[in-house]
Image (cartoon, rainbow, N blue to C red; front, side, top):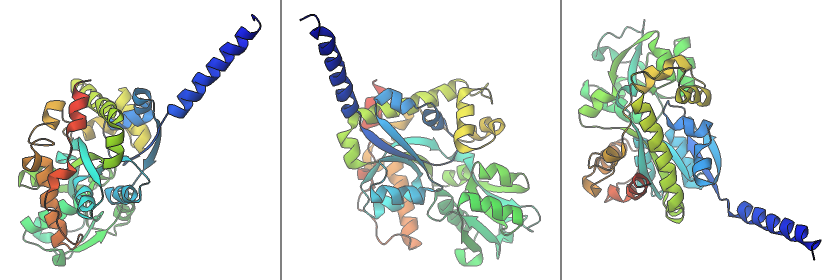
Length: 335
């Protein structure tokens, strides 16, 4: 009998290992290259540690590519800008905004190249302006032109991904661009900022980067969602708590530089351009809360109306609040 005990123990251990292996779930999360504390979660595998899930991370160049992947079912959770999110839900893709990664504020800007002959908005007429189509910067570029008394026909608007914009800028192929970091920081070196998203948002057209999730996945993995958003909230709080002294030696800064391929010495200045929201602000009427009267729902509605006018979508949804779900953020706030 005594000789059997080691065998029983080994069998029990094997069974436990098998159960834990089978129980681990898989999730695919998409991300883009903008600077934010969320990159620390990727670098340090914080979601994996908090949830026990097996996470596959996929990088995308634009929000439009993110939502295409979500539509195909190849990713479960991702970050994207408010414009591609609006386009996605208007096309009937079953996703919902569950967290605001950042209020874009000054982190996206309309920059004109030195030597392009642009000293005022009226000088944009006939110029070559690059933006990633169906992005937050595309939305704000068109809104800016409207405020400047110009239309799309008055300029040469070119659809370019961020890395292509950087290369075209260096060659002198474009005269202006509306883009985010790390490309924004590069083109600022020999260009000047004409206007930022913060100003345009104050004129009634707010933009943001949000975490969106497949509705079915979220419902079936509510505990995972709450724990994941708690990680995001804790990272934002870590940054806010050290904002005044935040620099290249901070672990979050190092993770951002590593994941994005950017210069760690520029991270602090870039993060300062964004607003990172706490739980109370996330759940307020200004953002995820208050249903159809909430800020996110109104932003998706206004953006969709713009996209419809631009013929980027075919119709509008009757209620955009059904694509905004604060319940997981609320659950995270209680953890």
